[in-house]
Amino acid sequence: MTSYENGSVTRELAGRRALVTGGTRGIGAAVVRRLLDAGAQVLTTARSATGTAPQGAAFVQADVSTRAGAEALASAAGEVLGGVVDIVVHNAGGARPHEGVLAIADEDWQDALDLNFLASVRLDSLLVPGMRERRSGSIVHVSSAAVLTPVGPFLHYTAAKAALENYSRGLAQELAPSGIRVNTVTPGRVATPGGEATREQWARLNAAPGQVNADDTPPLGRDGRPDDIAQAVSFLVSDRASWLTGTSLVVDGGEFSRG
Ligand SMILES: NC(=O)c1ccc[n+]([C@@H]2O[C@H](COP(=O)([O-])OP(=O)(O)OC[C@H]3O[C@@H](n4cnc5c(N)ncnc54)[C@H](OP(=O)(O)O)[C@@H]3O)[C@@H](O)[C@H]2O)c1
Image (cartoon, rainbow, N blue to C red; front, side, top):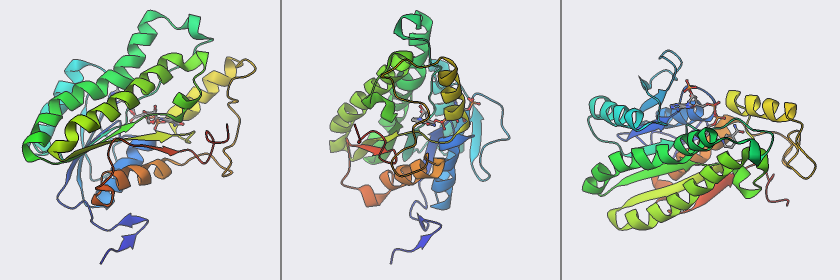
């Protein structure tokens, strides 16, 4: 019988080993907590030193936006998770807004692509071979609902996330015959340290008319909470979603569907 506790399906991920990038605050920390509650063994990472990962999770310091960081993380997964990774949640991401597209320098484009797109490509390339051998696995890429209404100050970020969604769908097709599911979760505005800092920077830039208003409240009457996104992620990585792959789940309080 399925039983629920704090909104989690109790211990449904017992025995699974999970890697979550960016799990020391915001959405990533909520995902780590959900997966731990569901019984998974969890390894997470951030650039800052240890001490802030949710209790019960293993932590390794790494910058996933670099090839070396991805390799260090995969190697830590080998040591801490015994070389078996059943679940990967690519959560680390974000970007600073600029005055407009012409103010985005080459290195800002490259940084946005490295963190929001290539980090997933590199880490997947290191972890998918093991999943293929075991003929099972579940991968979730965290995108952004901002891809649905791209605007100049964020084009480096939204273009990278759009590439991530496209990549995620294609990867799902390629890996489906190996029993590996790949999906995207696409959050709207969520109250997190990173999200709030970005919106404050954007407000200071005084967004031009026609751009998404940084102060708009989603139709459901509040901003998202990190756990709203973690619920979607924990569903997608579970066996309850065993017939879901190549999909993008938008979790945004109705914000981007109102047009
Ligand atoms: N919050 C929103 O409104 C919102 C909306 C749509 C999509 N999203 C997406 O949701 C994800 C999480 O966002 P958030 O708002 O929770 O972010 P956040 O509050 O800034 O937290 C980001 C987490 O990722 C880690 N991180 C950042 N860069 C990293 C790197 N290069 N290598 C390893 N770890 C890194 C951070 O730790 P360190 O700084 O110590 O590295 C932290 O643990 C991102 O992909 C973001 O694009 C957020």
